[in-house]
Length: 424
Image 1 (cartoon, rainbow, N blue to C red):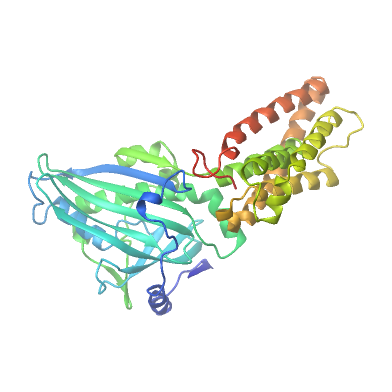
Image 2 (cartoon, rainbow, N blue to C red; image 1 turned 90 degrees about the horizontal axis):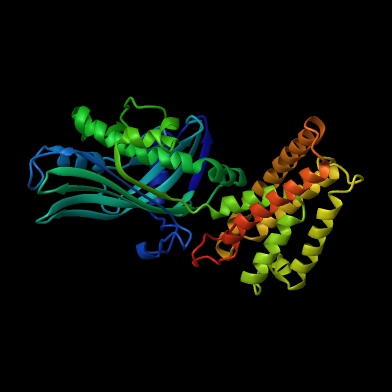
């Protein structure tokens, strides 16, 4: 299930039947934890912070560890400016189904997706005490993956730490523009949400204990998200400032961005030289997917295709230096560059990523459009205002083209699981 709305959310009366339906859904990924690796296409996030200290030994009744445990059990660690959780507290924590309301663009655009508590831990050993749970995304979620939230108290020092471990990848989308938007802005929202989770948990257990254990309730459901005064979401999306503010001991963010970066890079190549992008895509397909069942991939992977495209690329490199060659930003050449950018970006989708093909093609076309105008303007400025010979500028652009292509080749030379992200 997945729904989206502009400017407003869902009432309790609307959510109750949707929550009942979500309880019937399976998770939207088959992999177990050991298979959710970066090489297999899963992005990874790990972060750790110290909440504070209490007396050594097992958790103290009413102490820091127990207060943090109560916050986790009510899902109040989630900042409602990004993700609000809607659930029934009458359900046991293990296996509890939750509706996640994902909010973006100043909370004006909202998505409703399902998740479930897949595993719980409550352990008191000789060395430490641990409490936490994982949640797993359900069918129709715009992400796919598993995320662990764990509290750990060191019995010797009394330090209470909070850990987040996540593995995720894009899931299902209700429309093409949602997929494209996710590729462009999701990493910033995800980074902000992870950091704000550490901030909110610390704020609640240290400064607002009166709010702990109290559900935000309206109608038949409970909702996460007591209002707390923190910095804007954009602040925590930044790489350095947000990390200092959250007082993180450790933060590791390994994003598998091969699908978006490759599409973007191929679009930029097409804007510089229109045939370079499909030539590069054809070379990769010829090496890695010669027997593909996909029609587009099979055509570009044919042994003669990269040779023919290579000759066309050489011809374009020569023709670019001729004075009678039309401007790249006139209608026909510009349209052609956008088409070749879209074609190349869509063609290098792997079998598991065909659903992203439209978004990759759109990103490739837009990148080709922007690249065409950018390099046209730079070339015109260099020749008209700075007096640099046109041939010298063109050769410089060729060198930049070769450099970018060499950076893309490490991404596209390795099939998925062979030490590099799969391209899309």
